[in-house]
Length: 111
Image 1 (cartoon, rainbow, N blue to C red):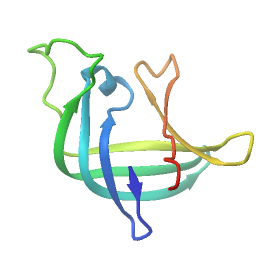
Image 2: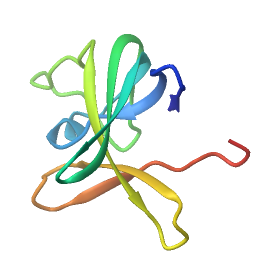
Image 3: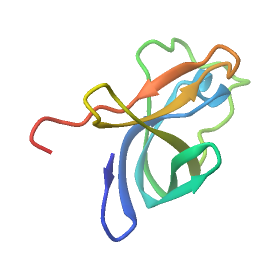
């Protein structure tokens, strides 16, 4: 994922959040992003507006006929936090929200 200063974004193989994660798709494409600040803290809203590719996770096996078609557009809410060294962390929750599994983004070395 690349977040540009002009508010545009490049997404590559992003999984769905919350229960959408269980469908096993990964979306790539372009979109927009915006940093919001509310009572719960800062959130990066990332919107996929032009899907260019759909992949699947290797951990997801045979496709089920009842599995919905991957969306052509999608919106993620990445929560903003800081680690023990005060570096930014972006993450979202996946699977059952009551369990609290987090999908943590990692910055590539040299980025």
